[in-house]
Length: 462
Image (cartoon, rainbow, N blue to C red; front, side):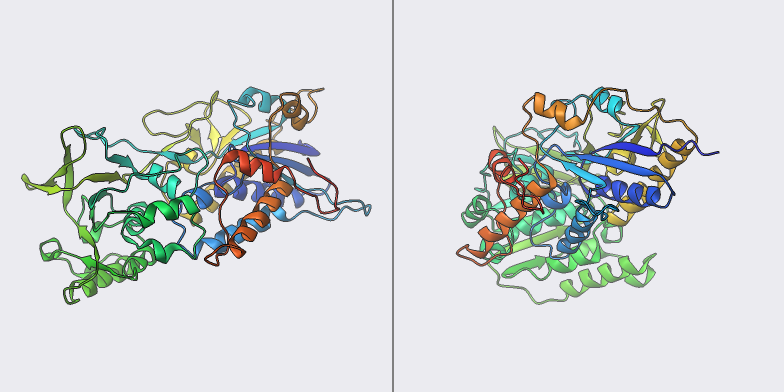
């Protein structure tokens, strides 16, 4: 005999890919159960959805548009009502609401059968070396948030350095290096905000040095990101033969790495360039110290595992050594790993509380991993619902929006996002440089545009 609730209510905290995939998978799983229904509220601390897809990926990645389109379809789809009345969404987007600030986690748990944490990781992981706190030493996550128009970071960024170091050998390091090296004119057709474009146009950068601890065979890029690096206009790629001793692409353990090693080797064969900017790729460099008197003036490395040290004159350092999980107030948290402790998505000793995405497994893996990760969590949640392990919402609490209204919380809705999306696209169409969209940066402006949203039947939403 099934114990599955006839009307399952679930809150998801975080509207990035992890949260949206989890909501879509849950809606699909419940739809396959005769007589069962589900209501999902997707809470996001920012006014707009999509998380790191909107605020954590370089704006010159055209393939990201396909991911956004897919996520949009998952949130925009809802079934037709059987009685012919206005259709009802299975997943309800509630933006500009931070759990732990605007509403407590315990208040959510009182109102839903289950809560799924999908807050991801937006902070930089620590790099414990001397000089890391010098002015001119920056976290890659902060720089990415700036050039992606995150509403909660400064509108300007110091770009006075001519030579900069980027520490890391992953895709974020390549994004940071490419944006630093790229001429602003080549970003005019992207959705980069105007304040960012203005900052990049005044950049003094001529040389960007990317340093990785491992050799070429240990890179963590993907072929697409690496290929894009070699297509940047008026930027020469500089490699160093000593880094490629005993590197044989044919011996690479997988085809992806073989492709990337061949790409790197093809760049080594290029004649010396005459571009106005250079992007240097260094391997076998372990950071030891950032040096300078009151500001970054250089960086010191050990030639990995050799005891040989080298110093480079740079005026800025960008640390792209990974991310650290975003804690939710009131939820268990593993400080060492930066994750919510869990078993297959079930948060340890917290019945009805789940996790998915980077806050569940740590900041590793691509979109495909996020999908399979969400599937595991949802499979376990559905099994717990079937077994009668989920407590029913406390009676008499009312809709969560009533609570937010009583607190005068300026939350945004899906229709609000559609209005903001249309507004940004219109800004792009009418821009001096024709663009697909121009992002609205200030939080207050995003909320104001969203508050003028009109629903599909023409009624004013807020």
